[in-house]
Amino acid sequence: ARLVGLAHFSVGYIFTYAAFLIASTSGKFG
Image (cartoon, rainbow, N blue to C red; front, side, top):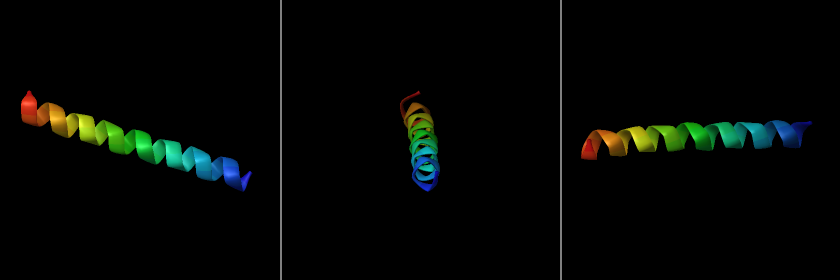
């Protein structure tokens, strides 16, 4: 359960960071 929770947290963190990075890039080139 702990490993699954850690994996879920990691995926959520990466997804959030990716979304922020995409938004930042779109803001610069958009």
